[in-house]
Image (cartoon, rainbow, N blue to C red; front, top):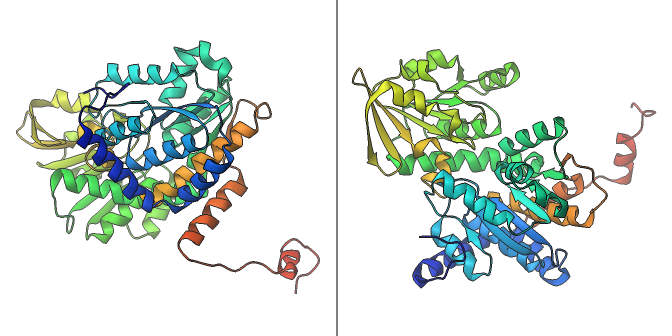
Length: 420
């Protein structure tokens, strides 16, 4: 099935997607408030937007919000296994062309990105920077039309900062990932819960009593460790950064080199954004039956060619579970082909947490559009007032009120004269 210029032949597929999009929208009150304003004000009127994101119900609500704001939106997938086909079909019915098929091969994946760029975008929305990278290399003739863009995830921000450092970034991009209302919630609670969900759906394992090795203790690793601990797992953290390793120790986890953890772990989860984190030497000493999964953006965190080289056989034993039989008879189970397990085997982050991430996306795109010609080709943080606005709106939607400083308190905090 192809969903590019999709002629909806299976109405039940699209209708099912529409219903799930509406269900997610109930859990996205901040996006709802923004959509209501966008519908009236049309701040993105006539602006062409190409978005390369995980095609999920939450992403659909962002796309619909941008369209309601007047934008001409086209979408493609940011991961070959993360697309929800019913959502892609429904988006086409919302008049948002969507180029995405769950399980698409690499050639199709990049063809879909190229099709999204045929839209001649003025704004780009990316998750992992594949769209921006393609635009800067193979489709650079289109750069003249681009006003700016946004980037959703840690891996993409790292790539874009490298592009900026090399002096090759051609337009301003807002690092949505670095907003406090994104990484403190999406990365920590969203990744934590959805990763556990994806592994559970793929394997139906019992977490209690298992030794879980979490590779990387950034906000995503923090969330995975927290949720695994809550389910009764014995959590081991692997880190290269001394401060993060110390933090993991203080949070009550075992910390050790991966060479040691590989011998005792039952389940391994990578959350680093780097390559070959789990490598040949680690597979060589893993227990029979070890389960390996990735929750970083790309599948390079697990050295799959090394695993294949050690194996004498491979078979698909369950959906999203590949059994590799090593030459000595041990079995290692790779989940989701090493891709984002929370999206490959589950539905990604809950709508409630994506509400804040995509609120940052919508408001940042509005900011970039209004700042045309004023921003240099750099990677920028989300403006602080947008970050705070998202938090205030989320609290309001939850029915929570907070205090504010008095004028006397504000004066005290900005004065150096009064010490008593």
